[in-house]
Amino acid sequence: MILIQILLIILILFVVSRLAVRLKSRQVSVLNFLIWLVFWIAATGIILYPEASSYIARALGVGRGADVVIYISLILIFYFIFYITVRLRIIEQQITGIVRKISLDEDKKNHKT
Amino acid sequence: MKIIIIIPAYNEENNIGAVLTELSQYPYHILVVDDGSTDTTADIVRTFPRVKLVQHMINRGMGAALQTGNEAALRLGVDIIVHFDADGQMLASEIEAMIGLITKGKADITLGSRFLSKKSNIPFFKEYFILKPARLVNWFFTGLWLTDAHSGWRAFTRDVAEKFQIKQDRMAHNTEIVHAINKFKLRYKEIPVTVVYNEFGQGVAGGLRIVKDLILSKFV
Figure (cartoon, rainbow over the protein chains, first blue to last red):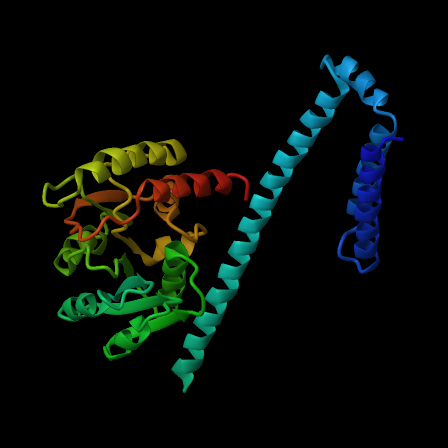
């Protein structure tokens, strides 16, 4: 095993352990946990057997295995940026809803007194 | 007929006093929505006993403040709502023209247009690089070709405020309202108005942010 493989696997073990802690405290759903687990297991597989990615690369018509990994990573990153932007917007709308309710309720209270 | 002028204000201590003084000469009800100002805006508003004040505890943006104003006005039993800026860009004397067609029952909503009259001193750059492209953006997102939909000047009936909610917290609410005209088949009319420019307002970055908000609204 070369050094980069060891480092990456230690990193993945750390990430998965954090994920497990979050599952235990119910900060992530079981489904989310499983999706991430499968993802990290697949990543470990490719780190241990880099040739595996070459098969996928050939099947997809991409030249090198490393390129496939980068392409898939980019797609995932873009998806997550989009997902987070949408979530953020929903949260902003919810905050506005709360602020509006408080301000209108305050107004009602002031009216009565 | 109860007419309420809604003024969203965020850190407008330099302008709000003059705007309220001018508006006070007219028989309209005035409602200021203080959008989480950190300056003395709210204190200045309180010195006008006839003016009603509603306060956001934190800043949520102009669209959010206008929607809060709409809801407060509905509770007060409003018949016609007018949206008015706190920065002194609009003339209180033109409110009459904005609500005329609505009081006569000939329109559900009126939009102030800076391009129907030649009175506004729109800076060249703002006209050709921001406002004209904005028309195109509006048309793309709403299907309505207006001469000017970003003046922020509008008046509408109680019915309109009940039908539709402003969901765009920031500046994209202008386009959202135009979209509502199309969706609810509202009878609308553009009214020539004057807008006095004392400073630049939103630049190109502001415009791009509106486009981003509009694109996102297709997903949320």
